[in-house]
Length: 207
Image 1 (cartoon, one colour):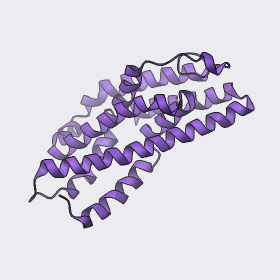
Image 2 (tube, rainbow, N blue to C red; image 1 turned 45 degrees about the vertical axis):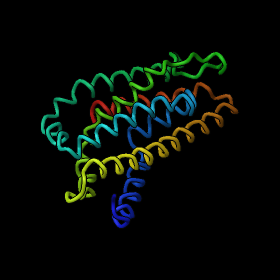
Image 3 (tube, rainbow, N blue to C red; image 1 turned 135 degrees about the vertical axis):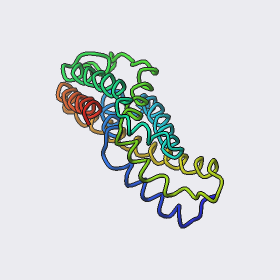
Image 4 (tube, rainbow, N blue to C red; image 1 turned 90 degrees about the vertical axis):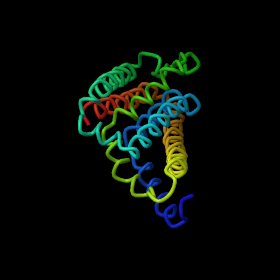
């Protein structure tokens, strides 16, 4: 088990880092605006799996090799970024499954697998995320104690913190959606969400 003194530093550190606006949080807020919190949770599932994978590899050292060979990220970064940008453009034009129609009841459902994939790719294709876990996570590992137990606890805490932050951003997006829907500004809401989504796509591809 980890010492209380370590957890007392670890928990607030990762709450601060996770709550800071970033690629995944922006994506969560955008989806909260367009498809609601409940369906955004499928994206969160993919994102949390990706974060758990990145965190694990960061501790065991595989991430260092990935950072030394950034071409490993190229396919994920550009394909994932292009796809998110395409979705954002469709939303900006009030088209596609992600856009909010004037008749909200007629909005088609996005496949769960597509939402999970978006979250997963966004999480693992972000080199800054790898660098972050390499620099911050290993110092909390005690080499004199069992690695699996420490890793399981720390990553579980990271995923729990990340989930609540994602949920908060998605809820904020859904609140904004309700505000704009009352005003009848569906087209404006689509353009705001589309711009954010295109921004995430550019961020993922070129960040």
